[in-house]
Length: 154
Image 1 (cartoon, rainbow, N blue to C red):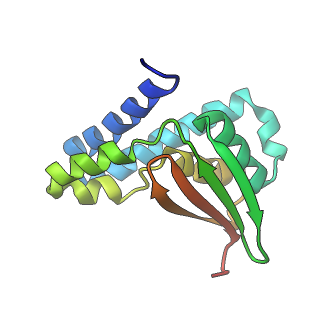
Image 2 (cartoon, one colour):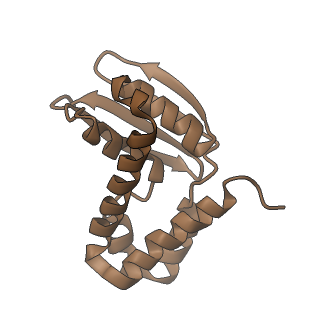
Image 3 (cartoon, rainbow, N blue to C red):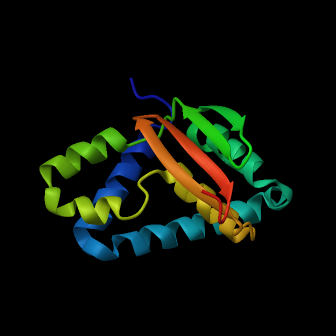
């Protein structure tokens, strides 16, 4: 049975690998541009996001966009967002594709394949929260950690 968000998962997979097939090393540029345009539309329709704190944005995007369970862990120099049950994660499909097409591994993975992290980065940038660094730590398909920390802290 087809589940909610299945099509989006397949679409993301297709978009990532097709851009790599067609554009090679230029694929990340296309993916970033598409994401920026999606964020512009999102912010036009949801101006209330402009007042949200970066970590709250991460949490809201994860819950609504991914259909995932989200847990926030505050640490002294960073915030860790634990994402479980992401319904749109195409990581398994992408890894299978790059296993069959190793020459495209660079263009596929040279820009983030996690749509969630990409959206969060672009939202934070669009809202002027350029003082935050985002690190994506994939665990397995549908689960990851997203670390949000002030720039310049390691």
